[in-house]
Amino acid sequence: MISLKTKYVGLDLETPIIVSSAGITETVERMRRCEENGAGAVVMKSLFENEISRTSPTPRFKIIKHNMGSYKTFTLFSYEQASEWGPDRYAEEVTNAKAKLKIKIIPSINCSTEGGWVSYARKMEEAGADALEINVSCPHSSITFTGKEVEKEILTAAQHVREAVSIPVIAKLSPQLTSPLSMVHALKDIGINGVTIFNRITGLDIDIEAEQPIMHRGYAGHGGPWAIMYPLRWISAIAPQVNIDISASGGVSSADDVIKYLLAGATTVQVCTAVYMNGYEIVQELVKGLTQFMERKGYQCIDDFRGKVCSRILGTTEIERRHLVVAQINKKIAPCKAACPIDQSAQAYVSLIAEGRFEEALKLVKQENPLPAICGRVCHHPCEAECTRGLIDQPLSIAALKRFLADYEMRMGVSPIQSVKLDKEDKIAVVGSGPAGLSAAYFLTQRG
Ligand SMILES: Cc1cc2nc3c(=O)[nH]c(=O)nc-3n(C[C@H](O)[C@H](O)[C@H](O)COP(=O)(O)O)c2cc1C
Ligand code: SF4
Image (cartoon, rainbow, N blue to C red):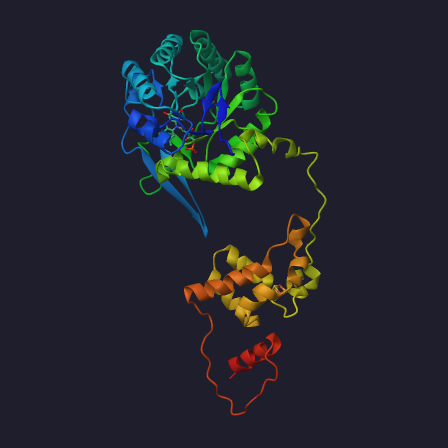
């Protein structure tokens, strides 16, 4: 029986997925939706000591699309700073959430004075919080961007909170620190139970016509699916070296991303932007995808594979630097094409498929091969034995790609073949109806 149960900073979670701090976790009703969709915990929208931050400007979000040819991604650029509530109303919501929900409730605080850190932390503990996340990384304003001695100030704040409460304390860090690893070591030494790696990055975007910064003419937070690699890199470095729970945050858009974070050593995985973009139901998909992965791999619990990738990461001196692949330009013909009995330009149609140009790929295949559906199924594909990608990991599945194109043609009803005029008087008889005979008949017909 597969179990997703996870111990995080001493708390028992049903799943390792946490909906992270943002407007989507501000009220009991929103937290309920996280619970209903399978989250193990929520980190509540941050409570700020600085009162001006409690009123966010509108609009708060802009989706910025990045298109480079057929490659597409997006950035969620946002200015949503703090919960609109003061400490008393916020604490009331913590107590309500604890009374009404089963999942673990983790409030988040962001303070600017020593007294603030201490009193807000105590208030959250008294309200019944299961743990406390300290947000020392808000991309709009926080110690990370205002302190002269950033690391020292973060540690001082963490120490005040640690001494003020006995519930588990988690520090949410910025990706803009110079040394996340040494910061996590230092936080562990003062008794911090977990770290969230990372918050969003501060950014700027510009309207080139108005020649003005967008998003209320300020710096704002930005992130998107592309943001996963930097936290992944640091988690994989920190997990084997510091015995502390790590909650991954940044760029999760699918169950694969959750699995990557766990393989890199994260204890839990947070999701935020994907909920804004797809709704709370995305959490169900993350849970389902994680369960399916574990079934496929035969894992019973997350500890069976947590951190498995860490020891497989090579250092700069260990990376294989020999040139395994040597371009065979002097042959003037791709090895796969040379190996193919009918000289099919496999390299060309594979490239077109990679760009999503299926009809052009099909047309190219048909110029040399009238039977792609059959070849894609029965050919013993000598092209794949010569595929140079095989020197790195595995050859491309050239025959299966051809089969895909043929099936695409039938499914979509597209035909790249132009009708031809039979303008020759002479008749040609083809003897034999195997692939060679049929192909000969086809090409002769094409020529009239
Ligand atoms: C609109 C928005 C509001 C956010 N508000 C907070 C916040 O109040 N406190 C906090 O610690 N992080 C906040 N975050 C950061 C998220 O909790 C999360 O760490 C970050 O977005 C990276 O995860 P993602 O790529 O899944 O969005 C916010 C993010 C977004 C997009
Ligand atoms: S699958 Fe067969 S027909 Fe197609 S490119 Fe490879 S060798 Fe040629």
